Length: 288
Image (tube, rainbow, N blue to C red; front, top):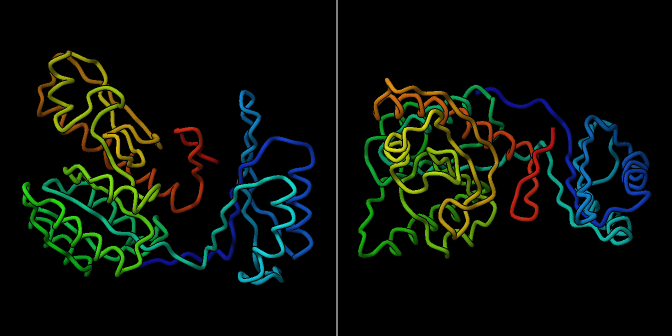
């Protein structure tokens, strides 16, 4: 598996829009030896909120991780910032949940193996045994946990125990066709990414391709989004579409949709791992 050679830190912040913000952050980084590699910002004109992502090289950085909070606090307090910091040296630990269809799982595992997704895939959990062989090929732990509809709470408790034990930072629902409870979602708030095989908000639920076919649509899509307690209504990260025609049957829609699902999910995961996403006002802002 390829590993990242980056030695950087990334700061994402939101605060009321005001003069001097960029200068203050840039000056802070300069004072401690930070060489800025990427900087992007956005101002929400309606709410007067400023959002920023800034990434810098750590080769000449003189401030320790432990002291960053203390040193940066005066700047953060002055501008009333909400902020988070990530270090490239710490790889996010990822768990994948999957059901019967394994095309998204296969794609994520491959991209992880070649280093396109800079993370540590720690385990795969499924309510179907079929993904075991694929997971074994990548030498990853596989946990088959069947679901009893009358006692889904026990299933989720077993899943959460595994996730906590492995220190999971991100959960990928790679066509995991089960509704997660509010308890589960709240425990991993803003850390669960789902792929929905439809261009949301159209055609929610389990059979969107059948609904699309019945409506005679000319485009089908896929949507990656963060999971919230409201089914298929979480902040959207990425979407894409493909054109279809009257000649296509449901099976054709499903086949074409699989390619979209893989691409849309992998892009969302990549952006999350690269700390390019800010959830703001029930939406997402994706920094370049």
